[in-house]
Length: 74
Image (cartoon, rainbow, N blue to C red):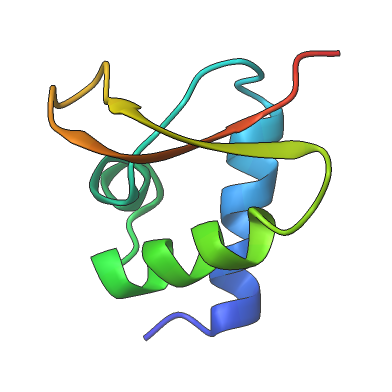
């Protein structure tokens, strides 16, 4: 089991390396090898930071309408 801080750090690093691309919790979990609950917790935590944006839209990876997170493009 991955520690929640490690999951959050992994998600933050991944999103910063993919600025402007939005991911749902399931797709983020797949990309990072996390469980969906770990990915969801990371999204909640990172979504509180000003450099990340939460939106409700269709995920471009899986096609489901969901809450998506992205890092601001610099």
